[in-house]
Structure formats: structure tokens, C-alpha cells
Length: 157
Length: 77
Image (cartoon, rainbow over all chains, first blue to last red):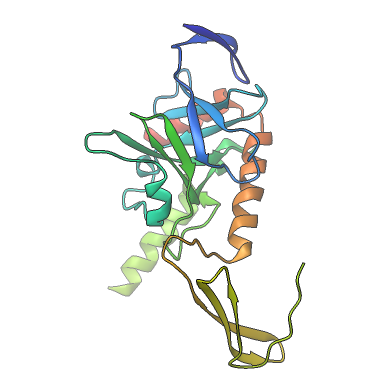
């Protein structure tokens, strides 16, 4: 095990050589190449992407399908190629979430997905080729919006 | 930055294999045609800027995870 500094939990122990090298940078964070993927305590499905170099640099990521059933990962082949995905390699894909003061207004960035080759510990931030994917997709819908959507659906019938 | 003047239907070539052609010119918009090898990534700059901005916003926040846990619990009920 090795001790690392984290933004959320101070110093913790992680298995050795478990850092993921971002061979395609997290945009704006090009100087931070190595990250650990850590579970967020008491929040199943939420993970910290914690920079190895700077404890203050950390993102919360989730599997977007948890909140968006029809989510599709569509990125350039060249981005997939730099992950060196071989037969049997486990590939994980996440999106970064932004949690504002009111967590009910949390959004996810489905325009810039995070893709990780877990077997080779390589990661990238890709750019989605889906035309309607944006950086601020709401995760929860307010009750008002849901009611409105139902109303519109009913009116359309 | 290298600045070149081009007219409609004229092109420039970069690195022997990337061709950028001025397809049409309007007072407020230029249409570009790009021919490049498939391993060359081409995006509108705003996409990069937008993702970068959002990354910075996400990294800066100190999220209130306890409040988030409550919201998720509430939404599941």
C-alpha cells in the first residue's frame, strides 16, 4: 500500500501502482497526468478522480447511465486508440459532475466523457460526437418539470 | 501566429496532408472545408473551451456531499 493525499479524506492508503495515467488530458488540467479513482464514502456509484500530484485537484465522476438511461458513449476512434484497449481489457466510462450549492441542481458533463482502460491504467477525457450532448446536463428534474413533460406528452396524444 | 490571405476556393496545405479550403465567404461567416487524415482530431474551439471551463468549475467546488446524500435519498423515495 502507499499513502496519498486527497482532497476529501486527507491522507489515505491505496494499493501501489493504482494511479491512472491520463494519456489524453483532462482539459485545463494538462499538467496533472496521474489520478486515483476512489469511491465516495456512503455514496454508491460516485467516485473521486483524485490527482496524484495535487491533493486539491479532484473531480467527482459517475456512470451517466445511472441518471440517463439512454446515454451513449460516442467518441473519436483516435481517442479510443490511445487507450490501447486489448481483448479482455475492462473499459470504464464516467462523466464529471458539478455539484453546486444546492445539490438538487447538480449537472453532469456529457460532452467531455472520461474513459479509462482499467487493465492498463490509462485514461482520457474524450469529446462526445453526439450533437445534443452538453456540459451541464441536469441530473435531477424538478417535480414541476416532470409534471410539465407529462402534460405535454398527454397533449400530444 | 501565421496570417495568410485567401480568396474563395483557395486553399492552404499544412504538413503535406491537411488541406483547408475556403468554401464560401460571407460578410460575417467563412465556410471552411477540411481534408485531413482520419487520426487528426478536428473540433470547434468553443467545445474545448466549454469543457475546460466546466472542468475548472467542477474541480473548484467543495461539494456538500451530506446534502447530496439527502437529495439522492429523497429522489429515490
